[in-house]
Length: 222
Image (cartoon, rainbow, N blue to C red):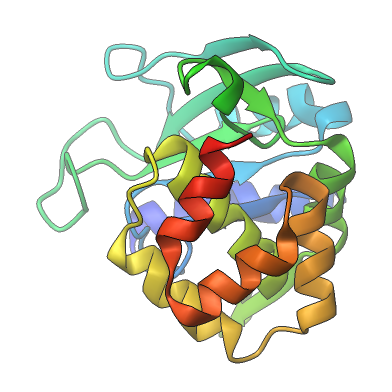
């Protein structure tokens, strides 16, 4: 394991030791060796300040790159983003600018269709909590971490591309969704999408047929 991975897993291991539940919801496919791009994760809303204290022991804050941010109050909480790094020195083998970045959030939020996608909104607390409740454990040679269930993962990817990415579906997200669709429980997927979006049956049908523009129309009609 490289030194960057070690710092990340020292942080995660302390969360495990203190029974603090979290979910890495993006950037986990190349773990434990490195991030896909950034590592995006949520900590429990009720213990989020404790998560930040632990992160500050193992990781770096770099305000010159991106400081701690609040996106205002959503439907049920203040939407916080707290970025950390494993180093402040760029390395050529790491993606993007060469930094191993971990973005901590106290809840799940995306751009809002109600304000022309210019502001953010929280997902319903019921779904936020369900992502944590149904999280899946991944293990590699004794190292472990938690990611969303396949059904929650697909739902989060739909929200990511239709809200944050201006209805521009990224190829890597579409490929991941197609792979996950081979294994999901359809009723469970319906349950997850129904918590956050209208017309879940139509969305799943459009996913399976590759008609992503139909999903865009649903989102744009909200």
